[in-house]
Image (tube, rainbow, N blue to C red; front, side):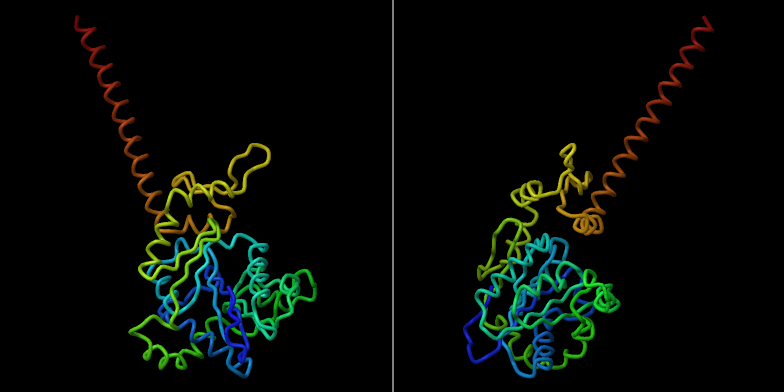
Length: 295
């Protein structure tokens, strides 16, 4: 997941947490890459070879939005499970990158913007947080255990301030795949990637809803040590989650809301049938008693 093809340039790896720093409403996602590149060039003072990796639980992000992001040359990685996963990505990047490198993290996740983790690597670090993000406050903490990377950019401002710089680039490449690269989708849960020339976004989306992927989720999901039951599980959808955050994402999804609504309607119908059946039985009992008295 690293470059190394342009030794006359600096190299920058960008790790974008899409769950805590989403594309703002109304913003064209095809411009995200250009905005990040522009902001980095202004900050560093010269161009660099930029590789951007969009991380997170991508299952409930609209497919068309992911497709537009990928078409601009951003790699999509589903299933960043914990700090060790991110450490593995950084190790791979560090092993394959040039001597002079920068790394930028875009997140509001303590496990990603954690200085002791990033301090294991020698590259220069930059960070962007969302507006009013909780980690902006943590960056100023005197307690080293609570400290995170200082804020170099505010995510929303980075996009709005650099949007104009991306217009010409978008217009000149609108009729062909941007940056000349195939879309690349990665499922970190299943260690599977998709980079076919035709419709990789469809294959990726199908994979995330497939039985094989669901089985893998059951395999890695956290369980109670005393009884083996899943710690984070949606009974309505039969959906296992590895962490509570991903279960919350699932519960907020339209897929879950529709399933919950259907389950509620079925439950109401069954309750109504039980009530109706009970009333019919009671009515028949009263009629039987009346007939018995008449005789």
